[in-house]
Structures are given as C-alpha cells and as structure tokens.
Length: 115
Length: 114
Image 1 (cartoon, rainbow over the protein chains, first blue to last red):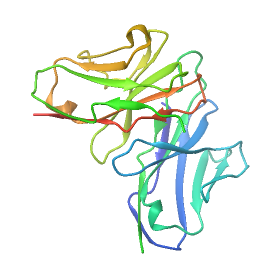
Image 2: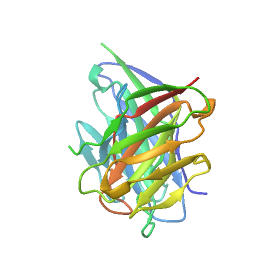
Image 3: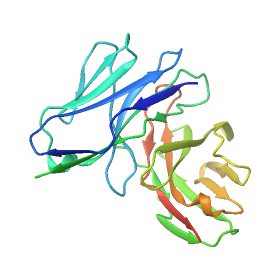
Image 4: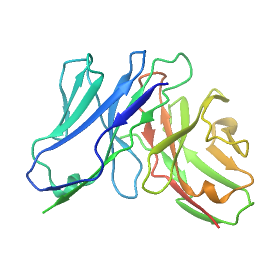
C-alpha cells in the first residue's frame, strides 16, 4: 500500500549545528508532500508544502528538497536554534477525487536543541 | 493563520461511558478530519467527512466511533462506549478543498479512559 517512511528517530543537536531529516515514500500515484512541525502540547502545524520535483522550498530558515526519481524528500536547516525543538513530520496526500486530503504522516523526528 | 478550535482540551472518563469531542473548523473549510495520537507515537488517520458524509475511514475508526456536523455547528467525534485503548490525543483538522490541500489542525483533545 501507499506509505511514507521517516528514517530518523530522536535527534539531539547543539545550537548552531545543522539538521537533516529524510523521508521516502512508496506509491504508484503522484503525491503532494508536506513537512509539519508539532511543538509540545500543540497540534501539527504546516511548515511548508514541498514544491515540485528538483526545486527547493524554504520557510522559517528550513529548506526542503524533493528527489522524484528516488521518491525521497528532505528537510534541512543550516543552523538550528533552541526554539526549533519540536517533532518534525513528513507527510503526503494522494490525488483522490472528492474524498478530501487524507494526510499520511511519517513517524516523526523529535528534535531537541541544547543551548 | 487559520485556527481550528477543539473542546474539551482534556477529559477523563470511565470506561464504558460515552464521550463527545467537539471541533470548530476553519470557517470556510469544507473537509473535516479526525486523527488519533497515542502519547509519543505517530499521528494516525481516523476519518474524513464532507458534505454530511464520511468519505473515508481507517481500521482505527471502530464501530463505537461516529462523526457528525449537524447544521454547520461543531464537527464532533463520539465514542460510545469508550475502552481503555481509546486513551489518546484526538486532533481535528480541516481543509478548504480536496486532494493536495493543506490541513489545519487544532491543539487536540486529550482523552483519558480509566
């Protein structure tokens, strides 16, 4: 079936270091890809929708890339801050007519940034 | 950004009792969703809802679960009767349009079944 796999488990970084989170997916359809962030005690919020294949997107200092051939997409930040501590989810929706955007989440990567 | 409101934020309930979780979606959105998240685990899709009907549901959406949005009021998730394994945070979400559209989530309703 269709699925999204997020490879990182908990990540602990020092402020100023770089972050990379990787996701891959399996589907025969053409998905729309997203990165969501969830801060403690809150619901997931959109970080951004990943742009078309082989284009970079960016938001709040994060960048996303998408390799359509490898069916993978990646989230990066060059220099993390303590305020970036959260759980980062990759997610996708599939083109479904009339049934809404069922968002399938990866397992999430919990980022803890220490000062 | 757009806000989805959920009531209550927390509820403790005895096993076997009924619970209703309420969601006030973004005002012009047409599609509504419930997700379940057990503490520290993945977000799991339960159901989505459009034009008064369930469009798709997962195997987690047991027979004891039901959803409705009477007359454009709250979008509700009802569990009757509750079981211990229903303890989780339930997130409501809404989207304006269909496939590929962004989902906006509420802050969740933490349900504890004892």
